[in-house]
Image (tube, rainbow, N blue to C red; front, top):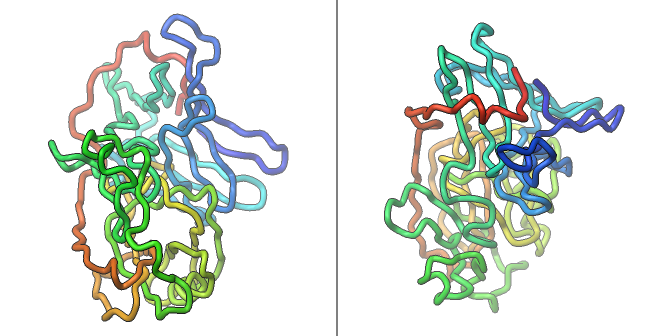
Amino acid sequence: MKLGLDRRTGLQRFLTSWKSRDDPSTGEYSFQLELKEFPQFILFKGSSRVWRIPAWLKPQRTAKAEDMASSKINGTVVNNRDEVYTSYTLINASNPSIVFVDELGSLKMVTWVGKWVEFYSVPGDQCVYGRCGANGYCDSNKGQDFECTCLPGYKPRSAEEWNLRDASDGCIKKREELSMCGNREGFVKVANTKIPDTSKAHVWMSLSVHECKDECLRNCSCLAYMSQAAGGARAICITWYENLMDALSAEASIDATGTLHDTIEIHLRTLCFAPISAIPVTLAFCLKLSKADFDIKLAGVSAPLFKESMPRLPMETLRKGITI
């Protein structure tokens, strides 16, 4: 099974939902590739984003079987001159599986093991796209507490709305009057964060981690950066220049193959701060912050990729899907 774009022909393969359980005409939900500087797969309701997942830029990478739930599928992301897509193959081809978008807007995979068993279903919690607004951070592991907080250095745009658990208006800078340009800025890290929406980000190829940081510092409009390498190796650098959307806890940090990756870290811009030690990771995501905002304690959260329980899925719900 392939989902993505054939650059040679312009053909794009994507999933659409049925209109209803009894109407097989095209519904309002779709799961498709957004091909900008950094490709990402997006679950849409019409033209509105519901859920998002990055499609990693390595030329080709096969997910390790042990990273997949119950070790049932291998996932591969390919991105070259001819095409960009994610594909799936079954480890045990004797168990047929189907990937589809249902009429309620869930992306699901089911597999046959004597009965149809739901392998995964997303979105699986309240941390849908835009739940915590611009510059917000969503963590579905907070129990009865509100899942939304602001990224370090930001505060709720409307405290009243946040008290009512409506964070859709997002967050604004705590100290907007402070200059972030040429004022001895630096970065502070925030761990366990999914890469924010890259629709308006810029990708730099073959920059080391330090070069990526310097590139962001040179541009007064740069709010954040992320690098996919550690230890100075040259890799992919992504920089953001507008409000950050869809920053989630690590539980949601799954790529288009279903693989849980190393956590990424946010670095907040500050004025003359002491170096921060951190556990080496593959990814780093950094956000500018002023020294006045450098007063926030950060904590990481780890979570399993998939829940152990897999509910039954009646045969009549297996409609417009892709067999793999």
